[in-house]
Length: 181
Image (cartoon, rainbow, N blue to C red; front, side, top):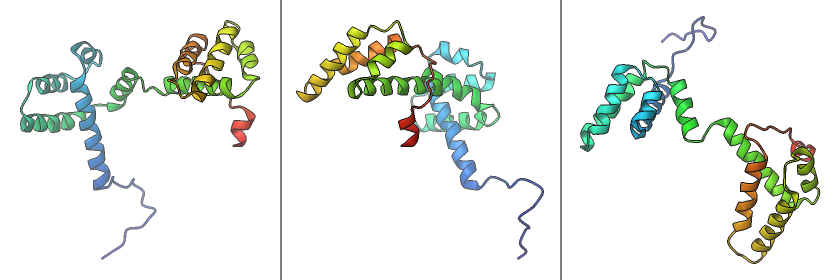
């Protein structure tokens, strides 16, 4: 048996396991396509054969036939650039990275408002439209609810108030104590 040199000029082919994972991922994406309503499906501007296969899968009720149709959709997905489709699906599912970063920012502000006395002033400077009195009241009530083991009504309302104040897409640099941690 002869060994092939490691510095071969061509890229290594994907392993069988990797190819299977990619095919299953495409089939999973096909399952997400089947769950979409017709309006959103039309927005994706899928190739006609793929769109027809998805519509056909929506009509199939027998498990075995549906499984075969899903495999067929996965096969058709190999010929399509799946990245734009996945981006749209993620955006529709609220999973876009920008949206997630915004939610994390809101979470950090809420946590700071509950633990740091100076956070309210900082928030007021950064977002002048903020109703500081309302935020102070919600923060105090959230702490009282937590101590009394009551449902976190004010905790949720504080998050909702922050959603109104901080526009989506806002980015803030990490604070010094977050970078050191």
